[in-house]
Length: 419
View 1 (tube, rainbow, N blue to C red):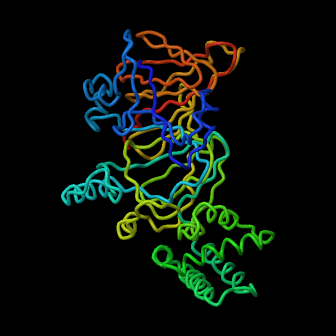
View 2 (cartoon, one colour):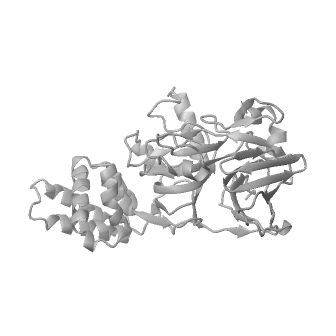
View 3 (cartoon, rainbow, N blue to C red):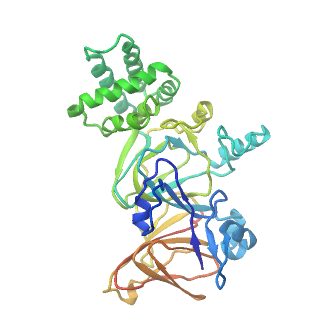
């Protein structure tokens, strides 16, 4: 087993306190948005070599010994650690975004390579050849936008905006064009045309920008009438992103307020945005993101339209599954990863309360509360709150045991099962 030290990304939307409070580390005063745990080449974890003082990048370590560290199956299928875990802390909304399928990623990456677009260019869409399905496991109340809601429900919101804005006696003359955008969007959605409404809003120009501002005012003034969570969120989104068409697109999406542990998975094509909260996020190891609003970054509308799944689906909640070993597992419909929640009781614990770590190959594990011991045939390793570890595929079985008087909580990620 290898102890890890991990990079914390300081994106502006990150919380300044949530990750440090969770892990018991000193805050830097800067936003701490994501702590990456894995071997992604952009921010690989550093592995402490057993019996040595030095460290080595985890991606380099895996590349040097793929069979031992990944196991035959993962080494053959992926040739690298196929998943990336993050502790994510959002104090402000992330961009509306979508991720490609594996086939779309391969084709898009090849096309941009052939065009000679620098991989670090701001207008580059595909940084690698992989897809990026995800799950989010909230540790606090967590707000998010996730996939398209029923088109008729969205139409009623734009109709409400049109009527409310139009009834304002102080509406400027040019405001009529913004009202027209709201009415046209409502009519398009009443026909069930999610693609058409989405395209019109993102390409609507100054009239859409004005509608964003007028909509935020309408919601603020008519707050006592606002029952829909999408409308209730609109004023806040417009405050962070004034004039951004993504504020209006948010009315077309499912608004979620997740409780701790109420996990959701996000397949390719699902347009989504995390708004606020702390959670454990797991994904296939990729950085392919196409943005659709709530951002000042590059947006490629034609490419985005090819990637987004314009289907109204039920929210893809992910329930825990038990195993014969008493494990608590979250298994999304992806082969690259699964998540295990490891909760160890307090001082009344007995030997039967130990938890076997799910190992379908390599594992990354982080302790977020208390202390625990990882017991393996090759030795024991004690982890305190904030510590993380990489467990090679050839080091099994590993059992998590409580250490000290209090309870402990950890999260482990391993490869999923072939589907």
